[in-house]
Image 1 (cartoon, rainbow, N blue to C red):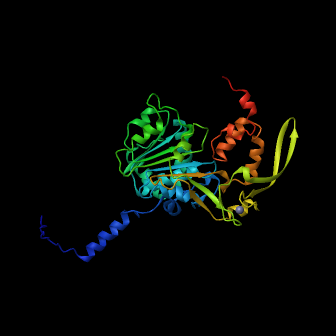
Image 2 (tube, rainbow, N blue to C red):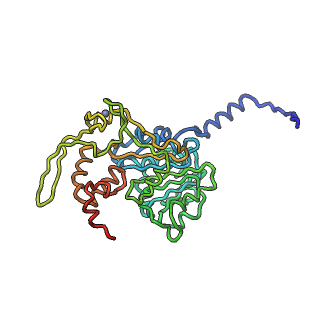
Image 3 (tube, rainbow, N blue to C red):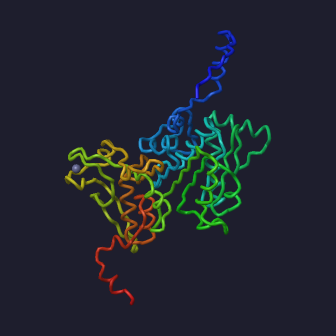
Length: 372
Ligand SMILES: [Zn+2]
């Protein structure tokens, strides 16, 4: 088959008109390739009510790859298994803000319960939107026009954000959405009413969009942990530090810590004062202070590099800029004799699943308890 050449009609457009149109396009068109961290560093403001670091947002090194995975080519899911006090809510907020401003679309955020969603909306979302002009103008402008914005539904030009609880099937089943964010998935209801697994239910809602993106965030719990399972199915990227002496890259854990402390006992209650903490490199045995480790070369080490569509990240509290190691070790000492406290410590500080069997070195008593 031969290709026919078509005759074209060219219309003369004056340069003045072209310049005018270009300036209009530049005015309304967002920078198309801006990542979540770039957006946050440019536009995000932190309300003074938050306490820590109010004012202009500055992305932390371990937060950047998590945020930017959302706009990476070919990625459909981002999983973050995080300890407490690593800025998880902020990462979520930056993600929502970037889409509301630059790439508006239908979005759904699922929290364990409707109450959690209301709290997030009132205590986090509203104050931050008010302080971030590019969001305030979009969400508030819409509000004044139709009065349709509520605590659990935010409308903006080009899309909306619905906030729902994992236990409410009505919130999960109806809509078609492009951006799905599930926060604290390990505390989700096992079933949304009688409809089944809430994460699966919500994920199905994204199937109409070729450019859908799903984010799952949580501290882990126990062997049934959803975030752990999702993490294992992804790229498995651990935040590690390079030992300046031997050059090996390590995940920082309590097992490699040495600490000096005093213990005081009063009325059977022990309290601890931790003076010094060092991390001992398990490869070369050199020891380092917290400040020295935090100044080391650091970054994500990918343990499952074959998986490209699901990026999964793991960071524990030893990386937090807001908690000192002496505090973490003090918590550990206070928790170690009590199973419930230890579970909380392992989940929220070490960001690991709690499995007491793994810690039992002497298995004889366990074997004795076996039944035929
Ligand atoms: Zn070393």
